[in-house]
Length: 505
Picture 1 (cartoon, rainbow, N blue to C red):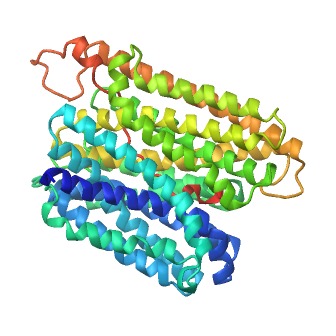
Picture 2: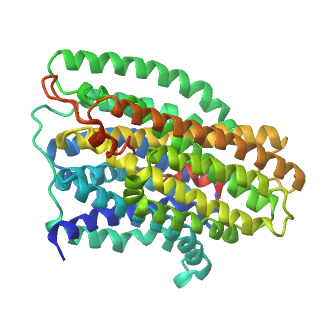
Picture 3: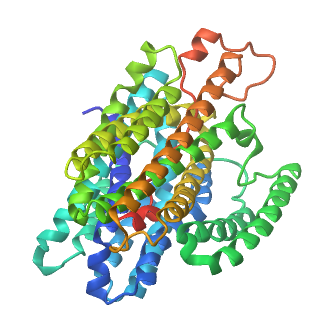
C-alpha cells in the first residue's frame, strides 16, 4: 500500500474512533445510569463534560499543531485519548466517569484538528485531496453506523459481564493500532516562529465553556444560562481586545487575522453554524418522536438512524463527481434536498402509526445523503482557503463553530419542540397526537434552517464567481478565472458529532 495513504488511513481511523465514541455514549447512557446508580444530572454531565473540554481546547490544539507539527500533536492526542478511554471504561463511580470524560474531550481537542491539517498539508494536489476528503466523509458515515448500531449490540451482548464498559474500551485497541502506524504518518507543517498564545488560550478556555454549558443543558439549566452567558460575553470582549493588541505588537494570536479575514471565511463559518445546528436539531426531534411518539425501544430507534450513516457515506463518495455535473453549487443542492426531505418527514406523520417507521427510515436515509453532499465540499473548501501552515488554525476554528452549532441546535430546536408539545419531551403521558404535532412543527422549522444554509452556500458560490480567490494572496496576482473558481468547493467545516447529542438518545 502507498505509504502516504497508509498514513492517511491512520488519521482517518482516529476520525472513525471519535465518531463512534460520541454515539456509543448516547446508546449506553441508560445502562450507565443503572450500573453506577447515577442521577440524571450526572448522566447529563457524562456527555457535557466531553463537549465542554473539547470545545474549550480545540483552537489551542489546532494552533499547537501549527507550532510543533501536526503529526506530533496528533499522536499526543491519540495516546491521551486511548488512555482516557481506558479510564472511562473502568470508572467505578459516576463522578470519576465525568472526570475521565472531561479528560477524554481535552485529548480529543488536540487530536481532531490535526486530521484535516495533515490531509491539507500532505496532499497538495487538489484532485487527490478531494478524493481523500470524500473518503473522510465515508469514514464519518461508517462511524455513525458503528456507533449507533454497534453500541447497542455491545450493550445487549454484555461481554464478559462488563455491561456498558466495552463501548468505551473499544477505543483502546484502535488507539494502539494508530500509534503503531505513527512512523508512516505524514508529518504536516511545523516551525512557526512565535510562541503559542497562552493568554488567548486561557481566555478561550473560559469563554467557550461559559457559552456551551447553557446551550448543552437548555431549559433544564436556567441557572447556567444566567451565569454563563454574561461571563462568556465579558471574556469574549477581553479576548477580542487581547487578540488585536497581540497582532499589532507583531505576535501570533490564537485567531490569526490572515485566517479570519480570508475572503468568505466568516460567511463560511456562518454556513457551518447553520448546517450543524440543523443536523443536531434533526437528531433530537427524530429520536424523541420515535421513542415517545411511536413507542420504539431505544435500540430500535437507534437502528432507524443507521441508514443516515449509509446515506452520508454515499453522498460523500459521489459529491466530487456530482459537483462536476450540476450547474448549482453542491451546498445549495444538498441543503435543498435536506429541506425537501424534512418536509416529507413532517407529512409522514399523517400516515398510520404502524407505517411511519418505514417512511421515516426513507426520510433519514435521504437526509444523510443530502448532508453527505454538503459536508465533503465544505471541508475541501475551507482547506483551500488557507496556506498549509494555517490549516490547523482554520480547522480548529471551523470545528469550534461546529460544536457551537451542535449545541445551539439542541437548545433552540429542543425548546421549540417542548413549547409545541406543551409538555416534557420523553414523558410517556404525552398523547400521540401532541407528539406528532410537535414533530411536524419542528421538521418544518428545520426545513427552513436547511434552506437558509443552502442560500448561504449559494452566496459563497457567488463570491467566488465574482473573482475572490480561496487563498488570501497579494493584490498583484491575477484573480482566478471564473470557470476555475466554479469548479472549486465552497466553504468548510469538519464534522464532529459530539456528545451534545447525548440527550437525544
